[in-house]
Length: 260
Ligand code: HEC
Ligand code: HEC
View (cartoon, rainbow, N blue to C red):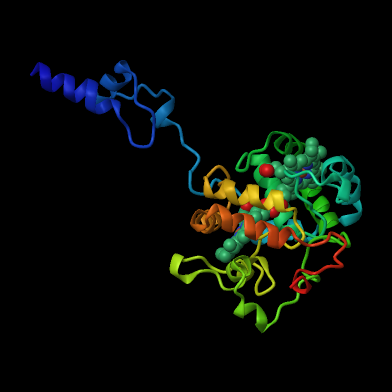
């Protein structure tokens, strides 16, 4: 009797699925079916697989579409110190924003705001913006000239006969490992809603984000698409892809396709 009571009330009921072990008193209450309603099991936990709160609803897309680039320029005065594109400011961890699709910028700001993606300063900055500000600043950056973006990239059938490992991954992927080609979502073959443009992004930033997805420290991608891709890549492949996408002169004069 004593042994089974200890097992049933103090040992077995202590351990809960997906949460920390309970204290002895909570465990006994739980074993008896009385909830002590303390944190752990009773609190809803953010889903580990996709904590983004944003969904591509008609409302969200309408907010983004209504973004006013002129007002966005005023909002962006608070961002320039870090996000300006000048060559002197090639910080490794700060992404360029010029030319990135507005849906992608808006989604990231929303994720910083809700904590789905965390990086100290950006969280504080995004919290200070209203949704309208975010849409406006996204519209502003999306329409900046000479940035990342689609007009710089052309591709031809030659891309499908690549031997260079980074270009192979970018255009063909690796079916054996279940890696879809980056080009299918990040362009130029296709553009998935919310996938940021990569051509002309800073290599160091790309590499860090791939590592963060692979290590599950960045988890705001819907359906874990990027985490599944990044986990399959070796460290060398991540480096090579970062160098390939980032290896474009920021003026746009040296397109990635002409570097061969
Ligand atoms: C103090 C420097 C700093 C300031 C000011 C700043 N940012 Fe950032 N921002 C960063 C850093 C660093 C990152 C990358 C953080 C990470 O790795 O998650 C970032 C990331 C971002 C991203 C994600 C981009 C991507 O490709 O995923 C967006 C969007 C963004 N910032 C928008 C803004 C906007 C809009 C403002 C102004 C309202 C702003 N930032 C002000 C430093 C800054
Ligand atoms: C199935 C579509 C898909 C494929 C394939 C894909 N990506 Fe992504 N990628 C996305 C989406 C969507 C995001 C935005 C995630 C989010 O919401 O934070 C993203 C984000 C990223 C980011 C972060 C960019 C930023 O500015 O924050 C990098 C870097 C990246 N992808 C690189 C790659 C590389 C390299 C490949 C190929 C090996 C690849 N992706 C393949 C859909 C894809």
